[in-house]
Image (cartoon, rainbow, N blue to C red; front, side):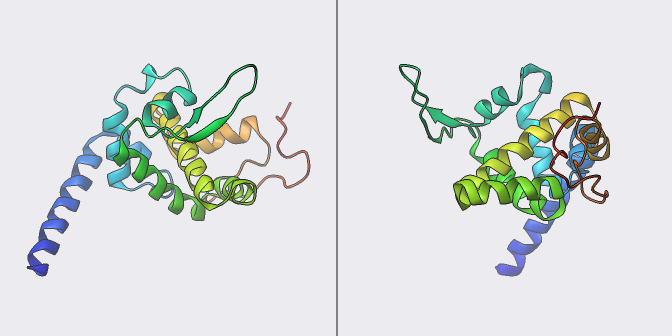
Length: 178
């Protein structure tokens, strides 16, 4: 029975990989470190037309990976994650985020900072949200990971991506280049 189930799983995995290769958006998303065929295909399918989201906050709200807000009288209070969107997409982004943190220096720095500030669970969700927004930008602008990194380095000196050298590590490395 175990052998039969493994064969079925292998067949389904192969079908997902074939479907991901047929879709240009999914192929583009698979260039991001940590994103495989399942995550790329699910993101491409669930988001549909990426231009329907005005910004990253609207996307995160749609997926349900944004904190619930209880605000009154000028005081903002945030609660847990809303979980109103697709549970599968949230799960896949969290898993892909854990892998991407190991391969992308910029995400790794972000994760470590959030880990110290907020703790393990919130840091993982924050990375998943950031990864999801990156994937959305790649779909919206029809760019691959290399182009995404190049654009990031134009806007920020020191923004490193996997496989690329870091440009600067000084105190001013987060400021835009003139």
